[in-house]
Length: 101
Image 1 (cartoon, rainbow, N blue to C red):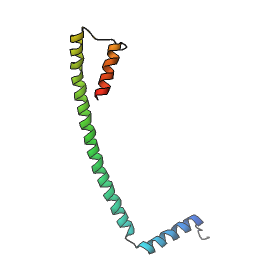
Image 2 (image 1 turned 180 degrees about the vertical axis):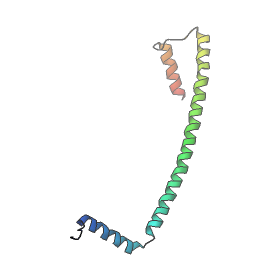
Image 3 (image 1 turned 90 degrees about the vertical axis):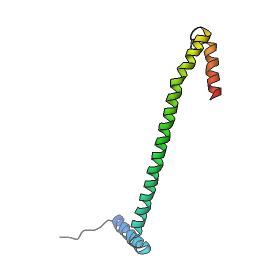
C-alpha cells in the first residue's frame, strides 16, 4: 500500500497552524474563546435591554391608540358626524396630527 499524500492546501494549513501555535503559545485559543464568550454575554444583555425597550414602546403606542378613538368621538360630537377620509377636514386633521408629533 502507498502512503497517503496530503494536498498542498492541507499542508499549508497545518504549517500555518503550527506557526501560530509557536508564535502565540498553546493557550492563545483559550484566551480568544474567553474573549468571544465575554462579547457574546454582553451582546445578550444588550439584546435583552433592547427587547424591554421595544416592549415598553409597543405598550405606549397601544395605549396611545386606545386613547385616540376618544378624540375622534369628541370630534364627531362637536362637528356633527365623522368626516370622510378624502374630505378637506380630514386632510387638515391628519396634517395637524403629523405636525403635533
